[in-house]
Image (cartoon, rainbow, N blue to C red; front, side):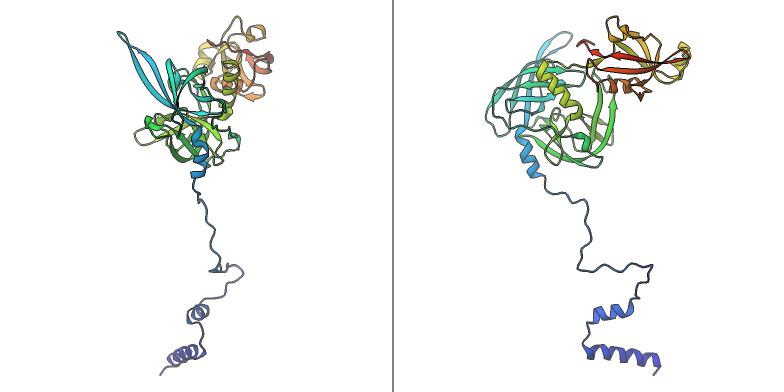
Length: 367
């Protein structure tokens, strides 16, 4: 018998006779002790950390759901030959106990009559339009009452890409109360200049989400995990393989809502100029000294720019210290200010760079 075989048999007999925990002892005997460059195996009694576990959102939905309304709109559809009565549906969110509801302008546009249904309420309410803003595609309607469940605005500036959000609304016009979808914030920096996705609306502060937003969801709330409204579900962009949903951030919607409730219209800062993005081709055509920036194409005779040192073919390169290369970037910055605020523009006129101070006006409703 070899020495090695004799040693192995002796070891097994020793373990059996001493009553050692065979599994642990054998493992300890065969596993080398970690060196200073090796990490020890975690204790089996300490569970590893678990990430990404989402608790049930039922409590959040229960909190917000009573404020999410179904909107049915009767409107007149005019064709070349006929005028016909049609119906469209959408969603809205009650934001005050006395029945002010925020929704999309395209939901209530051209309305002859608006009816509102609240979850778990047997009544059907007739709503009146308080104000509408086609540029932002937002509107406020009101129903009569004084003790409605209502939602609260959240703070979208605290959101991060990857945060969970919940979309509520009456998807596809289905009865039985609002539908609920869950997703994450996909992007916080999307902008769509006026006319880019159709119509006359301009979206400069939208939240992209992968939470499903379907037809009928328009005007419903996008809420955070505190149940606060951080966006108003507005539109989707679809391709053959995927769909992205977009909600107007309440950074914008809160201000629009406040103006519509108080004044019936939005007071929006106004320069009184028509703008174009400067391209190398445009710079060559007009013999501009700069091939980037924002061109002053026209000046309104009655706007603030007419009273300031601004001329047609000036190229704006900074708005109140912020660099601008695109016309929509300047518009986005402009609408962060109020009528009456004074701002500075850095412009190039030929080869002459200058700074101009201008007091912003109140944008006319038809502009």
